[in-house]
Image (cartoon, rainbow, N blue to C red; front, top):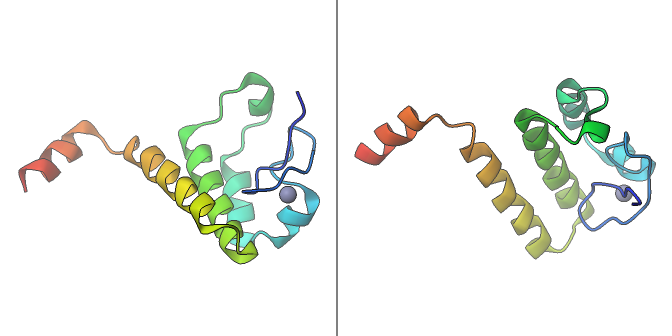
Amino acid sequence: MTHTCHAIACETPCPPKMFMCFRHWKRLPKEHQSAVWHEYRPGQEQRGDPSLSYLIVSMRARIALAKIEQVEPSLINDAIKTLAWLESKTTSRATQASEERE
Ligand SMILES: [Zn+2]
């Protein structure tokens, strides 16, 4: 299986341990680069067990880059929905219950 760049709408092959192809990684704002590195755990691409925090920061990075690159808005919206779903998983049940009561 060929691993490709994680930038939205990019199909450039790159090594599995690289988050994005070199061109996209260079265009990614610094704060997103460091957030992705901060959550990255060595070997996760082989084990297939990235943390929820990693999935969230990487999705934020992909959305930010897609906006810079002016990718098709429907593709960005799909990513925003996925991000919202991931973020909802970090909310505890107790917090959700209190929100429902309000
Ligand atoms: Zn790319």
